[in-house]
Length: 215
Image (tube, one colour):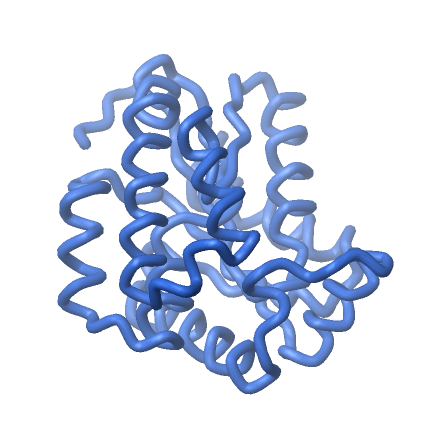
């Protein structure tokens, strides 16, 4: 997508379960808003009415029985609707889009970890995302053990969702997959130590945004 001065910026947050993505995405959205930038805060799967319905099916595990490829396709269907009915318009209107998860989660979870071939993942991205790439992606890195402990604490006795409930070894593969993505795309992706206190993570994020995007 061609970006002029009036076009908004696109920032995504990625990471394993319990890494604090949602919290940090919210903190950044609020900080950008206070800095005078119009902001659209969103998430995946979800972000548009149809995509939110798909989110429920994915996180409840209803799609799991059909295998990783089906999950990858459903994530992509949700993403296409999210882009067409929310993200593109927001960027064109000059908003800064801050999204909790995007393409890298599909690459890490359904691709590297669940075994959907890279060629298939790439083809789905081409169909749904095309030339729309985040200006900046934060990968919040934390050990799988600590992340899962946080997720369980957050659930407060409620049942963990489809992905939170996976075995530890799967979460370790997800973490490695995200770090590999960061190594492959250093121009777009920044790794932040998510084991730090929340305020320190937020400062690392904000300093990077100031340096790279000059809001």
